[in-house]
Amino acid sequence: MNPPLFWETNPLPVMAVAIGTLIMITRLPGVIAPEKFRAEVIKFPRSVMWGRVLLAVVAIWAGVVMYGAATDEWAWARPVVLVGVPVAYGLAIRFADQFLALRGAAALMLLVANLMVKAADRNEHPLRLVVTVLAYLWVVAAIWMAGAPHHFRDLIQFFMANERRCRAMCTAGVIVGAALVLLGAFVY
Image 1 (cartoon, rainbow, N blue to C red):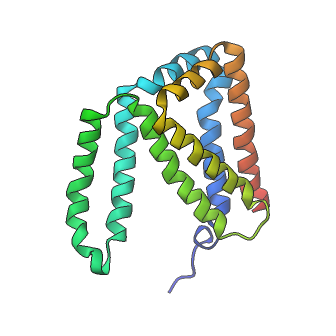
Image 2 (cartoon, helix red, strand yellow):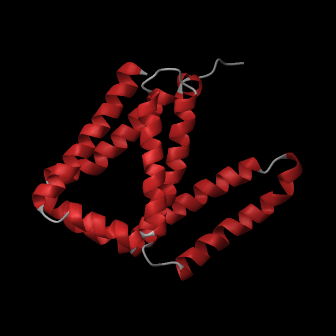
């Protein structure tokens, strides 16, 4: 039997680097070309394409999790999951298409926050709370995004009102992402 891999015994460094890199990659265009970035971010909440893509990712991820959780006495639920997830995806696309991109992003944030908390729980370092707090902030933001997407759209429009605000917010995001990468690479 092979010994467990590093990220299986201590997933926090990998999670911190991955999340930090993702945050930096998604914010760098706003630092480099804020005008184009602003235009795309302002269109995002009502984007049909991004809504369908994000919701498909969430549906597949949630379906895999539910299918894997259906063991022993719940094995009968596996066919229900295989049929129910695509049906739920189709119904969401058909009947809940308003702000679908924001709602898909919110669901994805909840799934990723779950991974972040699980990774932080397996580590004893006191700075693991940075990842835990970020995960819980994402949960609050995701609940707000799903429950009141028009408020979140207005918040996006406020932060993307001009080139200066856009660059400032994206620079802050790059700094947070870089801090997570540094924590994951050198501290955890």
